[in-house]
Length: 263
Image (cartoon, rainbow, N blue to C red; front, top):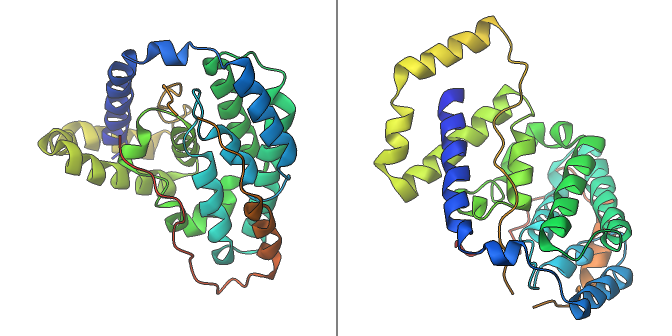
């Protein structure tokens, strides 16, 4: 039910707004000159392939959670995709890596500006390299990225989820059911009550079947607080991407290498 999904995402955004309010000082904070130099050095020393580049933003006072995890997930599941999907993995990750290196030195040291640069780059690379076409038939491969608790605070996971919501009815329904089910685990009857609002759900479904919507699904606003100290990218991540072309489509799904602790 699209109405249920809209309400759920609105509640997520509202909840995040209030939980993030106490950390406004971090969002508006500036990266120290020392950290800027450290991140810049990390970006320069990391290659354009692999996931090492994304670790440069993982642990500092302007932490951006999820880039490294998203990269590893796409990389490890490359064997499940067809040739087009494999091409997306290589080109999109390279697009992100090159963009981060080129744009970081051009933005201000304010955390909000750095994060917005990352989110814009995500949207551009996902669209340019056809994320929807690559993942549409294997949406389960990103299941560990579409998690209710990863929506707090908004960041790269939210940008990915918002993009998936534009990938057609089937993917949008999958995302909605997944988040609703996980929402019920956290908030119980609150989410169940939304889902039980049948008249509104039926009305929304009828409207969609008779007149296609021209507006995109409600997005979750990105721009939450971050936490923790910078560490150099791991060089071993750089070589992983070169293995993709030799991976067969019958390859098994590699287990998730990055764990994210719920807030």
